Length: 241
Image 1: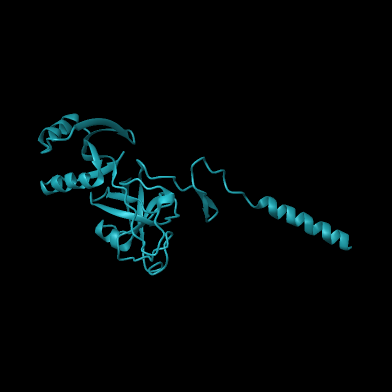
Image 2: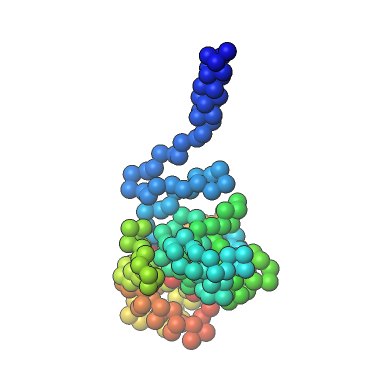
């Protein structure tokens, strides 16, 4: 009798063990994956050249005052965001595609874990981008600095990681008609940087994009951006190549 019970227990243990899925194989150079809601996520080894389009949402009172993924205390009224795979400490430009507003935010948390959503903003960031009332909006996010996971600061000061040097460009406009792009290029009040028109396809539509290239620091890119915004140019955003 005891032998039968023992054999049944062994069989149950084997069945249970076989049902537990091992984590997926980690690509070379990538940090270990993590699992949320039965799904595995692979954090990226660095933020170089990262861009993504999708739905932005925001999170608030339920998490206010609690620790974020990098150990900071979440302030829903501050400016921060959560992303599933970008290295913590990455600065991203969030471009609201529905009202053309932009905002720079720092990734300090993980999420959102809902299909189709690419970034979870703090309430303060969502309000600045005009998303707080609607709850969600279509956005494009672009990494502005180059952060490696093993460089994220984890000391008590929780200072943001900043990687100022790199290869940046500013996209000034995107047009379906090439002559409109050429007209913008001629009128740009930038004399000491190369201005290009690139032709790119997005969702089956051809766009002619006007870009100021060859900017070597994020600080300098911000200077050009502010200068153009002060001259009335809108819809500008910085991209890290």
